[in-house]
Image (cartoon, one colour):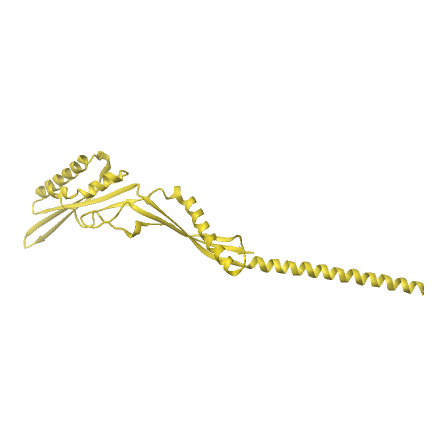
Length: 239
């Protein structure tokens, strides 16, 4: 009988250990599921960053033409216009290498036995002197007085080329803006914002500031004042 009592004691102890293991295992499993479920909770928000900048490069494609029935006469007019253009930019203080020829074309049209010849010339002004470029556009009517008529489409373009210098700070600002939005959401839902689950950087855009477009006259279709904009999409964990 003694050995049967010992066996019962061993069985009871085993049952207690097994029960305790099941309780601990169940707790660990439940806690793991809870933590896994919490890890799945997240909120996706967008953050915006904007910055006003001034263009650092100006390019002006200048197209002009001359028409006539005699090739030497038409060519002489084009050469006169080219000289007038170079003198105009020289008078504004631009160095000679700021202006370069980018192409020319000759078109002949015969009608009723009359040969009409048109020569088109294109020059490119490229400069980092934005203030001087603006003066060139503002005073361009002086070219008309010099006998030069610019073709439609001749326009000054202002570009901002230092985007890489401001990208890191703007991405950080956009991410900060996204976290502010996530924190507001978390506050409203009674949770807290954790770390970043995933993030996607949107593309950078450079547009005229406040939609401003200079108007009137040749080459006045752009403005040196720009707005750089980026939107990031961030998925934050919720705790």
